Image 1: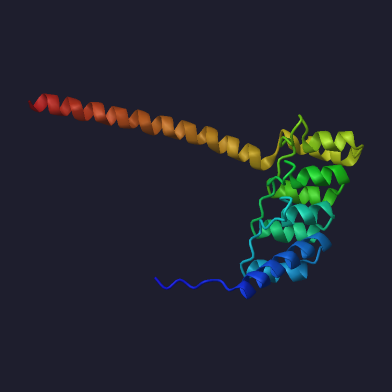
Image 2 (image 1 turned 90 degrees about the horizontal axis):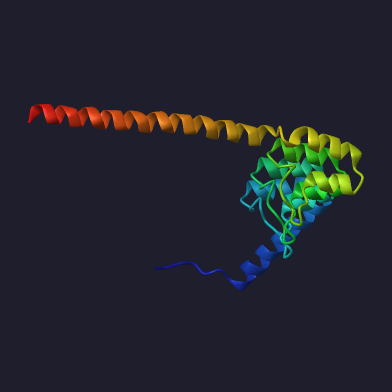
Length: 181
């Protein structure tokens, strides 16, 4: 096998590009970040503390960058090293536009953050009334979560029917064989 080895210079350059991406997310430099994502930079790239690009962009209130990252597949509920999601960060800071984008892409307002906390409770704890009202309004009625629950219920019904029909078909086949003998 002739596998190409990564040179130390290539590894150094890749580390530099990762830092550029993390800084671009933190600073809201979507025009720098988007071509990197298009070229294959992982949308879930994280720093040493587990803060992903979308966590950094959301925490620093850069909705355009959050939208770009979500579009390129960043996990909106991915936790950092402290067990917190991007939505918890924006609930704490009160960044409404980022919260709406995260929820639109599937972030869960009731995702546990440890110690019984959720993004909803962060909004309440830090006096973010507008955020609290918004997160409560989408929490139990979260469109993505409810779609999955409905799909799960539908899938369960379909599977029950299929299994039932398979058993019926098997029984009919068994009866046919019994008649022939």
